[in-house]
Length: 336
Image (cartoon, rainbow, N blue to C red; front, side, top):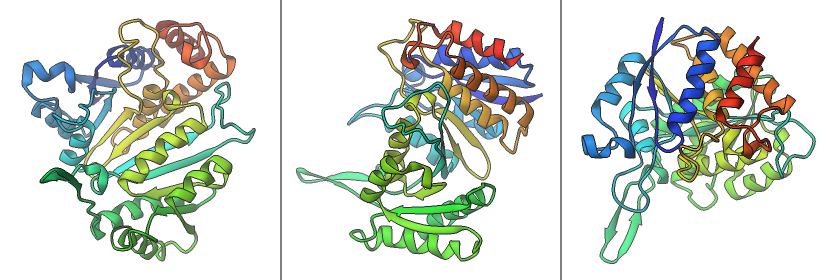
């Protein structure tokens, strides 16, 4: 039985992780949870939002599932998510964007979307290298050839396993000629090793428009950390929002799969949270190289999609009147 680190999270975290545990139990998934926590809820006890024992658990188990954690705004502790990625060198942020029957979107145009964003996860503006210069604030954007090369290789390896076999590089090299220029040149260099994959590049501002107008034309999108953060949320809106989109942070040694939305403190404890994002992330986790349980991943994913399509017992954000428990039980019912 494979042991997996389970980070329960803040806000609605405990409610949606409980949903995953119930679905996994009903599906008889051979997982033993190594349950722990990080974020705001452990600050008082440990004096840090990311205790060392959490990192050690992930390093030992190689695979983790993480509910959302409270991130300090503007000042104080750095984002727990950023710290996790840095400490464990989880260099690839993976966001599958897939249309789901029964889930509407204001940007839905009748055609199914199936793309994935591959985001460099360790450097650039998002890594938070900043300081004060007198009364002014300065942020440093560092792009390295090493990090650009390995995220490019990940993107092309992923593209080779997909039907469309296309990679789109997103950048701002027309203005940031050194940093984004290095990223673009490096990915292009890597692309030469995969001549069977169609490769193009688009400037970030144009890309936001193209994704709204013709998202079905894209397959694998590879980009830097900061742009990837923005595009990931934009693309989630194409298929119904953050509540139905999964995510993963993957490195060479271990991986953390996560719900991509926030902690939703306004509804925490009310039992009405939507666990779909974490559940779909958990199915991604089952396909991890350290678990390789594709059968149960397919079963649970099918049950989730069937539940959404039937539209029964859905949570309020999905247009239904059900609560977290009712929605979870409906998924369990559809497992059979």
